[in-house]
Length: 117
Image 1 (cartoon, helix red, strand yellow):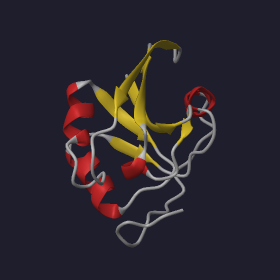
Image 2: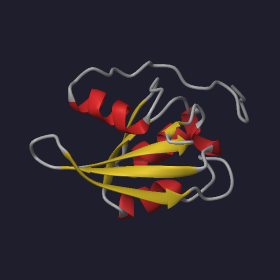
Image 3: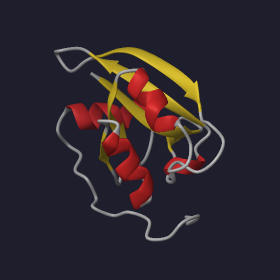
């Protein structure tokens, strides 16, 4: 399985569409991180960029996010990528917390476009 995280300064970026880059972790069947890859963030908002297709091509099945609008979340879901919102902190620690079953979706999304946190 592959997990992607919108990243800024090695931490989960609180807004999906404005991150510096994406960190992609490859997870084995024993829930261990076996590979880490970084890809540049495309220009533009998350709901309008082609990032969902790029992540799908890379085999990503889950995106751990700080927050995102409903449009971006819907687009990711359309590409077969589940989203878990409300994540914060170091991307490696967040991934390990998810793998231990310690994270739950916050249920919160940005309710208007270009929301700044």
